[in-house]
Image (tube, helix red, strand yellow):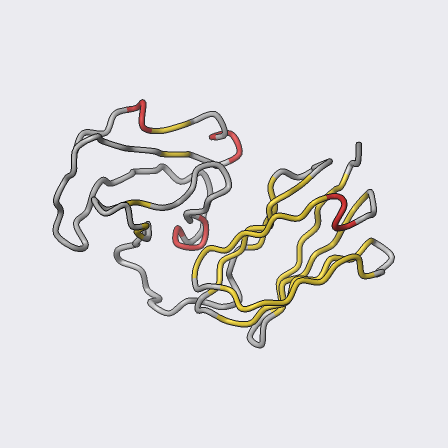
Length: 175
């Protein structure tokens, strides 16, 4: 397994985003839990790395494949962490692109598979759209279109579960 600079995309590094992709035409056999590569970073501010570094599928789909072309989970692990349990109050909720004019992806992480509701409102509090469902543990994404929301301007959205509530804002510019 040989990775080079060409396996990493730095087009969005100014926004704190690094993409990576690797493929090979021949099968490679690895033992379970084999470390494929290590990334090193220099911190620009104080914080907990496991809260600020995560994998998502906004730019590059976060998945691997075996020789039978079955999808494999991509895992990011942290060594020497003081907390081993997921802190349900510190999950991620974001959308990309933001602002947007046609569609945006809502991305969020869940500590376990669970019921959740995502509610979209305009700045006056009027409900524009509500999505209810059972979502997977880990990374989830939903595509929301301008037509789904029907209102330009600042839109608030809320992810609510039995355990926590997260809120964020986006801007729908329209056409």
